[in-house]
Length: 175
Image (cartoon, rainbow, N blue to C red):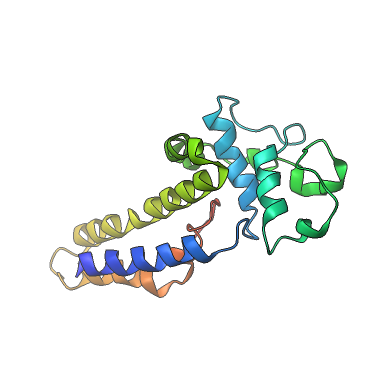
């Protein structure tokens, strides 16, 4: 049953990874830029000083659902017309989640910035999927005489829609 729960969650998560707009409305561009900053050796972004990269702006500019698509903007983070979108304001978050996504970024960035986005999205989803066996093991420790509760506790995660949709975008969610 645990494998079934994992498979259902992975399928739902993959659906969300592939269908959520790039960039999602969850400040995904800024979260991705945090990963990018770590991957390039620039460290944790400084709020009020650092900006997202040209690649992030280029993706926003070319997205069919982005409001930036119709504006006469270049992919230049120095252009003030980008407004808050160009700002790297996620540096207030701790680096653990973002550091876990650096390797997929580095592995797929040579294939282009969009390939890096999807690689990082899949890695984010994988981090969420790892909670399934963890919840199972915690339930096993808490309820050793109720074997039905072990996989059932992991299955409860599937009842929370954000369990697979939120981590499918690069974002630091408190789900």
